[in-house]
Length: 272
Ligand SMILES: Nc1ncnc2c1ncn2[C@@H]1O[C@H](COP(=O)(O)OP(=O)(O)OP(=O)(O)O)[C@@H](O)[C@H]1O
Image (cartoon, rainbow, N blue to C red; front, side, top):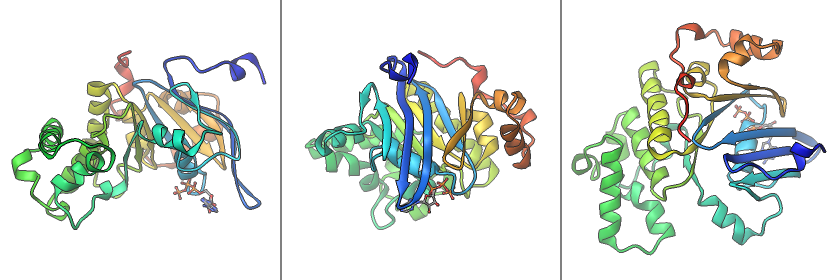
């Protein structure tokens, strides 16, 4: 291991993976992954089906442990942490799932209040204030939306509600699992704008798993291409498109997306 590999992560390196391997039975799903997600930047992990993206995400948010290797979250190595300490680490992440994953049988208010009810002992009045505030911040009319059920909202509104819920405990890291999957192009753009807005407003570090190359080009400061459990290439989307890695160039080309006309967030320097 060279010096950079054994040195502790820098303070702006929010999530750092070093030589992470994960094996299920005799199948090695992650085969020595190195990855760094920097503070207040958006890192998008792309790759084909079965490349190991979901497995990687579960390790990052401490829902599972690596077979070998190190994972640092805000400077703390979580690879061999006790279950108690892992619970503390898990609270650093807000999760935004595919299709927002709201509970359909309860109101929007109860969905958004859920993390506060579960993880805090705040009085009801305070919970009410915080939920209504968050809905408003996310551009929803709280009085109208709070009593509704998720099924009464549009796809874009449900994503906003999902984000409000993910932000409730004010986590420093937001993790999005296929946030634009199954959405029409217009709603996908709205979700991309939201991801960027959350990053700018709250300075959160964002990690996005995506099949959506257009979205990757719009929002990623860093794109990480995962192929068969290994990082094939990492860098700005443009550097993957124009760089020397043929696999990365082909992967983007084969998506069929005309990436040249897309507005890239990376033109704006991230706030530090
Ligand atoms: N708990 C598990 N037990 C056994 N095998 C698993 C487990 N979780 C994942 N795998 C295997 O790991 C491989 C990678 O799966 P993973 O879901 O991480 O890929 P992915 O890149 O997210 O794919 P997709 O884009 O299709 O969701 C698959 O072959 C899967 O069967």
